[in-house]
Amino acid sequence: MGKPHYVASGRASLFVETMGSGDPVAFLHAAICDRTMWSAQMAAVAVTNTAIAYDRRGHGNTRADVEHYSAVADLVAVLDALADGKRVILVGCSQGARVALDATLLHPTRVSGLVLIAPTVPGAGAPVYSPAIGALMAQLQEAEMQGQQDRINDLKARLFLDGPGAAAGRVSGLARQQFLEMNGAILCSPYGGTSTDDLATFQRLGEIQVPALVMWGAYDFPHIQARSRQVATLLADGIGEELAGSAHLPSLDNPAALAARLIAFIARAGAGK
Image 1 (cartoon, rainbow, N blue to C red):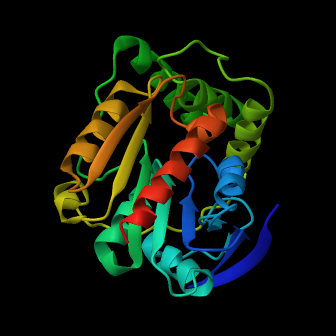
Image 2 (cartoon, rainbow, N blue to C red):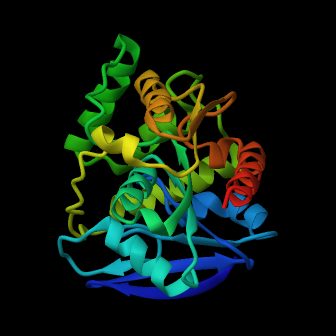
């Protein structure tokens, strides 16, 4: 457990955790997780850097009244409070990667590097599912329509933790328990508003000049893998890497391997300052 902080942004009190000291690295979680998805990577990065992770609205220990808001503005509030005015490396997974990309487009001088894992990118096109994956998505949609929260949680673990390219139950033990607890809490969280950020991000990827590492799991949805490859190609200084033995959440199913890649990237990005 790192040092806890609360940062005000609009009508939200954002819960933030920091560890270590040095140049800042900020972690942005997926929509189906909270900041604790990064626990192993935070500890590894904190050996040489200040590691910052926060719960976005509707997640973890953050509390917020209902309002429309900017997810990027929330991130900036966290950085204003805890990054000591330094440029930051942003590490984001899925929707967290979207916030990282949007923040880099809006505030390019504040970002020194990007690590994007299975990034969600507005404008990248709608997914096309195979029959097998489509059947799983139909089960998820039915469970959502019927409000079956335990079923929703189990299906999301099947799709995003195990991955549609792997067997059901591939990830077990503490990692699965952690996912089910995180996402289960999110499913019970009250509605807190919608982010109004709308940047046509995919069409603007070429504007981003900072070093970027884009990663995707070999067991993730095929369309997410394809999109990640596109993002790595379209970024001016992007590198793409497939993670064997991972799906959508390598911080949980392959924590040590992901931490090693983060440390190597941080060293590369720092050398280029």
